[in-house]
Image 1: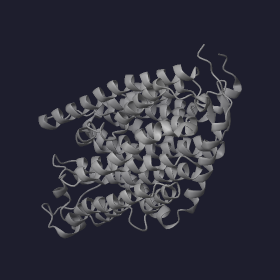
Image 2: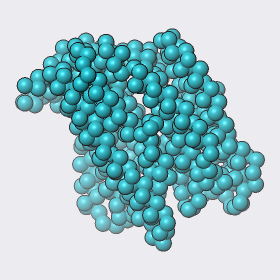
Image 3: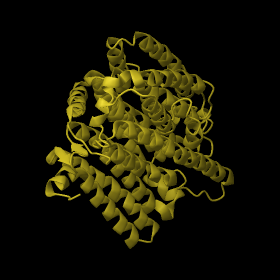
Length: 493
């Protein structure tokens, strides 16, 4: 296939990320000192800020590679927020990676950029083969990042890191062939790799099997029940700044891939996938929230909390129309800002300690009032309490699901939100009502504090005035749904 100037123009944003990746690679090769390696982290952060700014200067639209890739308002919206997630996580993790992986800082930042590149390409993919390739490009670097730290003199933590990384890797390499087999069966029954061609698929047993395999493979990557077994161990063992990234952007990427196939490609065949997705949604909501109740490890509690939140994402996907996708996108932004901020606070409080239990937060309001306030607001946003952005996110998803006829699912989600509030307030109670075990103030590095502050301003700002975000989410959702009428046809023969 010939690559034209028009193709390159449409791929402007991925090419800008590729250029940044190349610069970071050169900087890493050119430096050997720890200070020089730390520079790659700052280069990655400021480079992502520049790319983010360029999305407002030269937004692009069009199709590339014969219609296999499309750039529009949808891709622009998602790209901006993926870049924000990558930039904030990079900023918040600079000190942690310098301390625990001093000679591998450049590799860490390169892996993060490779993962971001895969995400940015995936959100515009209109071809099943390209979709899977981009998804793997975004996923494979995460396996290495999960095991990037080397802890001298902390053998137990080293073993824990290795165990979590191996579980994450094994689940990843098992789930990919399952999803690939599902896609192969779907393409075989449709006779085409174009997502637009799925709209004309005829119901058959092989198509149903293919969809079940695809949902199973993606379920492993999302960590939905019953494919969640790797999530708590990986979250507990990996560095908190990386978990802030792993728990948000990659999961949203998997949800976007499902949305592209199910909502955009198979909306007229929703009876094939709605029962399975509904079952996964309910199981994930119920089990994720109830398993979080008995957790004493902060990271494991947030891991099960994250599993529960995937259920709300899937509720929005079940709606399957413009409103549902708009609420899905709003929830994406709310979750990115809230969860990244939460894990960065965990890093600030527990980063230099081997103890990551809830008790470490005892008396945090006296040791660091601003960190305690930040954590409280993040927890309230996760719980969906007024008036931070998480409240609007849950409310909008509930409204869309209720109007679509899922009233029983809305009631279930609302009741489980009360359960979630209980275990979130356990941390708040410890912060404000317990006596601190250590009375020394918590010293927070400026880069980490800046990352927390960015997320805090985001959840408070959009909580106070959600309209701009809601309008941009609606415009992006409209662009996403318009791709259903695409006439792209890429024959397998």
